[in-house]
Image (cartoon, rainbow over all chains, first blue to last red; front, top):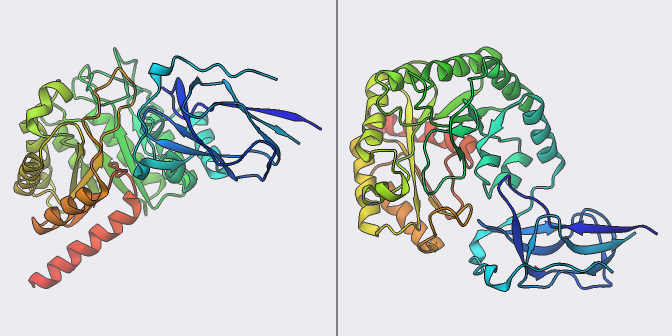
Amino acid sequence: MAKIMLKLPKLAVSMQEGTLREWFVESGAQVTLGQPIYALETEKTTVEIESPFEGTFTCIGEVGETYKVGDPIAEILQ
Amino acid sequence: MTEATPLKKQLARTPKPDWLRVKAPTSKAYGETRKLMRDLNLHTVCEEAACPNIGECWTQKHATMMILGDICTRACAFCNIKTGKPGKVDPDEPAHVGEAVAKLGLRHVVITSVDRDDLEDGGASHWVEVIESIKGACPDTTIEVLTPDFRKKLGSTDLVAQAHPDVYNHNLETVPRLYRTIRPGARYFTSLRLLERVKEVVPSVFTKSGIMVGLGETKDEVLQVMDDMRAADVDFLTIGQYLQPTPRHAAVDRFVTPDEFTDYEKMARAKGFLMVSATPLTRSSYHADADFARLREAREHKLSAAS
C-alpha cells in the first residue's frame, strides 16, 4: 500500500496560492484516474482538478481556505 | 497525518461565477506541448499570461508562441507579462518557431510578442523572419499575428503586414477612457490607426482586434469602440471577460454575464463584422483555428453576394 500526497498544483507561472472551493468526493471514497476531485479557485478562474491516481481518497484541506502552492490538499492510498 | 496550513482567512477570494469554471491542464498532449516549448526555448503567452484556456487549447496543441523574449517594455495594468529591460533577441528563434509549428502539426498558428520599445524597429524585422520561417517550414499553415502597437516606430507595421500573414490582429484592449490607467504606454488612436493602416498596405489580409470587458467600461463605450473598429475596416472582433492575474493588477470591476456577451455579439454582427467571438472566456487566439475557417467563408459569402 502506497500513500500519495496530493499537493496544491501550480497552474500558472505566477500562481502562488489557491482557495479550495468544493470537494467532489468524500474521504474514504474510491477514486479513479481522471475523476474530478475538487474545485480550486485561482486568481483568474475556478479549476476542476482531476485525480492523478486511483485509490482510496482522504480530504485534508478545508473548503473556503486558501493554501499555498505545494501545500497538502488530499491523500490517496493505493 | 499531515496538517494543511491555511493562510489568513481574509485572503480568501470571492467565489467566481459558474461560467468561469475550467478543467485543469492534465492531458498527455498538454504535457507534450509544454515539453516542446521548453526544448526549443520558446515562450508562450498561454503560460506567461496564466490563460484560463490553456488546458483546452494545449490538449489540441494550439499554443500561441510569444517571440522577442519574455520581458516587456510596457507595464499595462491588466497584463501578467514581466516588465523590465529585455535581453538580446534570440537569432535562432525564427527557426525554432518554424520547427515548433511543424512538430505541433498546426493548420493555423498564432504568434504574438512582447513590446520592444528598446529596439529601433520595435522588433518588426524579427517578426518578418519568424513569418518567413513558418512559411518555409509549413507552407500550408495559415499565420495569424498579434502584434504590439509599434508606437513611434515608423514603418514597422507596414513591414510586418507586407510579410503577408493571413490574419493581422492588434488589440485595442479597452475603451479610450480607460487607457490612462489600463494601458498607460499606449494611445487609443495609435492602435486604431495601426489596424486601418494594415488594411491599406495589404487589402487582402483579415484584420482582427479585441477588448476586455469588466474593467469599468459602459455599454455605450463598447458600442463606440465597435463603430471605431468598423470605420478602420476591422473584420473580426473578440470580446472577453477581464480576469485579474494577481492582486497587483487592476481589479475586476464586475463579471459581465453570458447574456450580455450574447447581446454584444449580436450588436457587433449588426455593425458588419465578418466574425465575432464574445464569451466570458474568449481570448485573442481562443479557437483561432476554427474561427479563421469561418472568417474565410464569411468573406467569400459576402463577395459572392455582392457580385
